[in-house]
Length: 305
Image (tube, rainbow, N blue to C red; front, top):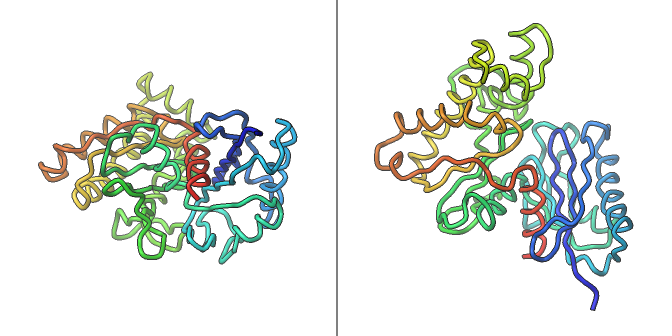
């Protein structure tokens, strides 16, 4: 009997990542493409279908060996209907029946959900939130997403759109966000906003990894950049921790690679500003599965369908 596999796809505002995954959730092969290189929705959908076909050919695997394809997407998704409402950071995606479109192209069952939900599912089953009954998993990248595990279940809300921590307002007035809101957390600590702030401070583009190195060497401007990220994120998490009395807050995504430059400040703010009972319970830790979490979560979701 032929070995069975899953395919997990993580579509973000920056990268399209696709993995061939075993039934024990080990990644056997993966491809990473730039989301921005596909100029419109139809080209991006074709790129997803082509990437699925390509990874199967490269690994000499028949479509019949794939139990399902799971896809994590950066915006509000109706996971039951397989329907994309919109993406705040990728234009041209509004009311798209992606599950149906893709199943016609690739002839394999497809399930779709919000990318942070699937990252959260992976960290809950196999990563940093394993053993936690109530947790939130944040992904800090182009956008700021979050997935909630409440009483050991992924919580999606009444319209399947819960967990949009990035669109929690953290000020009364402030920058307009791509979602249409004002002063959203994402408008302060999304990757693009931090990059712009770096350019304003230093007069040139500097990769965020380099900004972290500069901060660790004591550069005051670089330290201030990460202190501000910790401040806004910490204040948003005070609200979430007080509201939900969580055991674990897991933080992942590219921006989280700044490590203690963010984590120390976030922990301090939550410890000092959250209510004592909730603050005493919660642990704030780095995601364990790294950049693979979204693909692994998508594979788990595909299999459970």
